[in-house]
Image (tube, rainbow, N blue to C red):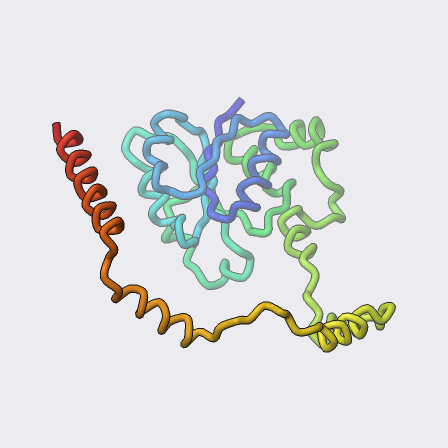
Length: 226
């Protein structure tokens, strides 16, 4: 079957087109950006390239330069949103045709078949079971409409139930906690004691221990350098 390379920026649209074309028997490979397009063109040798016409990472003008090189016979179809078609000059793009988005799967398959000189009626009839009813909107539209608007906070915030009075009981318990018999020193007293202990001279035992510790560290360092 004919080979088709997709260079479509919108991920949902990329998956949708890829799935639709594979279901009707085309050999399809996909790229999310045009960065590796020249290499894939050489390795895959597509009969047709379908690309985003005006995106952030995929530009129809740039794609056409990479596709329409000397010795390359690949055809090019560009995808444009319906509202953008009246604002652009299609003649400035070196492409064989344009497909409106959101994509109608039947229009997509018919356009691909027409440009590849295939019988669209035969393919659509054979694989009609894979396509949604014509009355249904395409999958890209459905995905966007599944997102329900988030109601304002005033509608989502509800009063907490009164419960069984446990919160009130806990509050009373905290108020009636008996005083601890253990004496607690304040921070200033503890800090003053710490400074006093730090300034005391070392005892002979502490001095000997500190000297042994220094000798151990020196010996350990010498052994490590060896």
